[in-house]
Length: 329
Image (cartoon, rainbow, N blue to C red; front, side, top):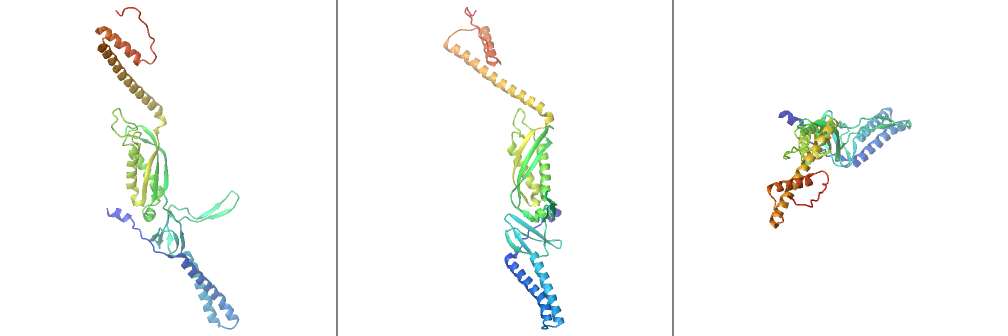
C-alpha cells in the first residue's frame, strides 16, 4: 500500500512571472552588458579610464551578457489546453497548465517522455530543417483507435473486436512521472481490458437469451470496459471519457460455420412461429364451423381437415387446390 501511495505524485502549480516583464528586463540587461563591453575599450582608447578599470568594465559587460542569455532561456509560451512539467536538478519542480507567456527558473527543464526528440529532418528537395523537442503535454481530448484484435469469448470461440477510447490527460504531473510513456501505457492497458472482458461473455446469447453477450449487450460491455480501464489508468493522470466497440465479428476461420449455425437457428425460429400460427388458425376454423353449424364432422374428418390445413399453412410452396364435386363421404 505504501509503495502505491509513493507512486502518485502530487501536482504543484508554479506561479510563474510575467513573460513580457522578464523579456523587458532581459533586454535591458543585454543592452547594458553590451554597452559596458564596448564602453571599456572605447574609454580606454580615449584615455578616460585606466587599464584596470577597462578590464572591470569588459568583465562586467560579459557577465551581464551571459546573465541576459540565461534569463532569455526562462521564457516559455503555453498555448490553450497544454501543460509544462518542470524538473530542477533531477527533482520535480512544478507544473504550468494555464495558457500565456511566462518566465520560470532557467535551470528548470521540461519533461515529456512521449515528446519527439530534437533532430534534423531532410526533405525530398534536399533541404534540412531542425525539429525542436516537443516538451508540452496536450490536455486536449484525444482518440485511441485500438486496432481490431483476435480474442476468445467465454465459449472459446475466436472473435475479432475493435475499440475506440476517448480520453484526455487531466493530471500532467502524474502522466509524465508515474509511468514511462502514458500513451503506450494506455494502449497496453486497453488491450488487456479488451481480452479480459471478452473472455467473460459469449459472442451471442444462448437459446434462453437471459445472459449478456458481446453482440447483444455491446453498450453495457463498453461501459464495463470504461470503468475497468479508468481504474487501471487513474494513477497515470488520464481520464477515460468514453469507450465504444467499433468492430465485432467471428474470426474468419469459424465465420462460415457460425453463419450456418445462425441461419439454422433463424430457420427453426421461423418454423416455430409458422407452426404456432397454423395451429391457431386451424383451431379458429374448427370453432367457427361448430358455432355456425355449417357442417358436422366426425373425428376422422376433423383429423383429415387439420392435416390438410397444416400442410397448406406450413408448406414452403403454394398448395394446388383440388375441387371435390361429390360427397365428402
